[in-house]
Image (cartoon, rainbow, N blue to C red; front, side, top):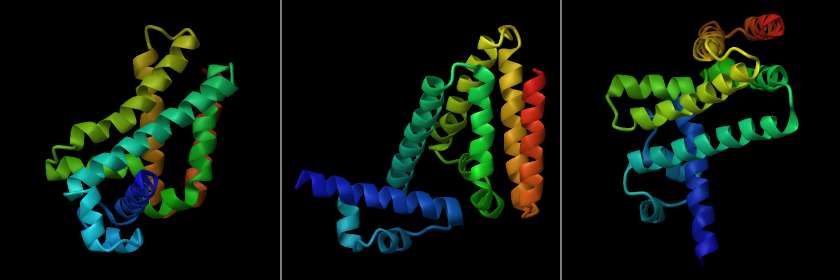
Length: 188
């Protein structure tokens, strides 16, 4: 029984994650999340009382996914540059979503900052985990005194590329700029 409940809860979180990304948090209703998760609203409220509760679960899921992805690159590659390149390759592999919806983390954080949501600070942790990971990579490249600024610069480039690719719906721009970013990384 508990396993079925966890499966239903997971379906709700995954449906909400997709809708929040594609439509925005404010534009997504309980009814849409319930329909996308194939649950009636009565069952739905058993798992989540408010939309903020769902958002908190989505943020936690995204955070865990990001940590897992970054940790897998830490295990797979010994070279910090190669690890960071995989972040660029990942961005390239997400081009369709990025062009249509923007960065899932960046767009959510931006939306929450405008709404003065209490979950804004929790959502910023989604970029913080990437930023801290990048700092660790730059420290490993002997940029200890500049690791914070280098990491911020790398993340700013990725966010800027994602934003402009989304605004102009331009896959070629995204691919070109990520390649340029990776070439910059080779020179570091």
